[in-house]
Image (cartoon, rainbow, N blue to C red; front, side, top):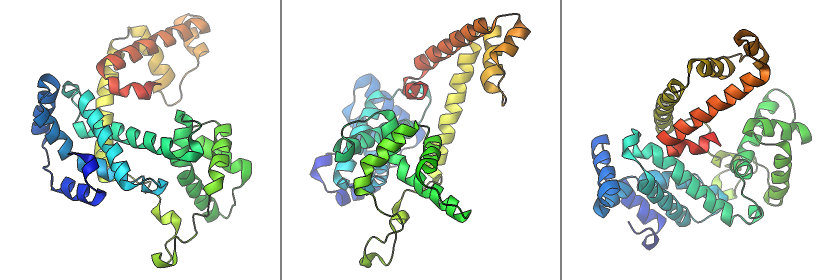
Length: 292
């Protein structure tokens, strides 16, 4: 599907008419492309999942980029996913492709949003795509409780919610302030009073996202189990007690039980995590971004 020869409506119509692949057919096509570089198989795989790419692209319209450009970037992410997909991993192609599509669209938006061209760290990217949504929710919750969040307190809560340093929140607020407006302002008289907050992406899990998340978690549990089984008994005990308990134990308490110094327990823990990382990277390169 030549993405640059159609407008977004034409692309959407063509995508909706594309075949729906069952798991067996999808697997055959993936093998044909990986092992034989069968371009017909690649075309079927890409065409079948363009509806997924277009659906994800539509969620980024509010950043002001032309929809056709967003779709093209989503398509590029889809093609990258097809090129890197390993059918031996036991994951559906759609599950794998979601990450590549989203990353491609986000990179495009960041490159073309003039306010944030000066930087594109993972922290900035997370803030850029989530801060206003998180801020609006925090302000709604505070208002419902009869409170008003302002200044440092609001920035602190955003920082904790998104998991980034508070100074990054302050910097991004400054960058976005030039185009900031009230989320409760109406878009136009023709929109029958619809507020800007109404067009923010719904935070609740969609059916497709839920299924994909369940598949990802099941596969990740399998990889983690494999990685844990490759540790020796003492390493497994330390990782279990430190990270898998709800109230993780201290290095000192484990050292007292094992007859080791606190520093030695820390070294063993670090070595165990290095082994786990190595196993996960070998078994599934696509989860490396989760380990950084």
